Length: 204
Ligand SMILES: Cc1cc2nc3c(=O)[nH]c(=O)nc-3n(C[C@H](O)[C@H](O)[C@H](O)COP(=O)(O)OP(=O)(O)OC[C@H]3O[C@@H](n4cnc5c(N)ncnc54)[C@H](O)[C@@H]3O)c2cc1C
Image (cartoon, rainbow, N blue to C red):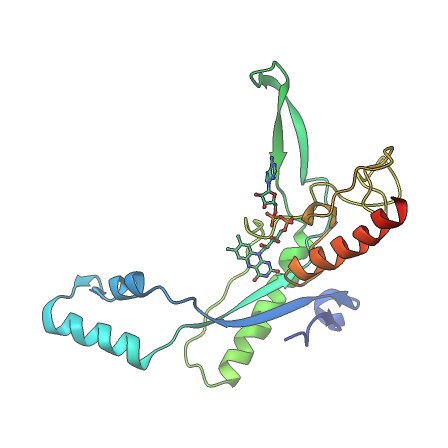
């Protein structure tokens, strides 16, 4: 759902802001762990026929349904790589220190959209809905390590994803993206790779 891709709620944000995408998904099947979850009920261990009944019921009468929210990761000075002042690698060079911080606005937007997603679940008939937003970045949607931009002082790549100051060194993975774009990023990474490939071909 992209009903809140832009949020026009002056009361909550004071102005129109960029929102995000809600992705409704069934939990990926994981039979062993799903069955394992059934062995506890109100803190008590369940076994024998009651456990078999619970497992049968879980597999035939219920389905986990959830939603995920994707919103921008605004660039922030709280997110950067620096060199450690004392720790060195095997060649005697300072090791990298990675600081992964988040912009407070991201959390505000995420929390707002989570509430919308919960409301959609309720409107679909769900009786018990829970949801939460967190500012720590997900480890599986990594981007922004080599941001593109016009100014070599604030970006590693130029607008064509060429390393600033070089002729033929291009980077087309998720590193070029200054933020996630409020969607899952992979198709954008693909699209940009094709765009940059055309630029490289013209240069050959
Ligand atoms: C569990 C999971 C679920 C995900 N779900 C989604 C989703 O639903 N939708 C979505 O859009 N995105 C999803 N993603 C994110 C998506 O997979 C990444 O955003 C995308 O793959 C990033 O592309 P990339 O080219 O930047 O890096 P990668 O795809 O990680 O490619 C990097 C490549 O570089 C290679 N490599 C690394 N070091 C070296 C080296 N020294 N020499 C040579 N090669 C090297 C690696 O082997 C790898 O092939 C998911 C990721 C995970 C882990």
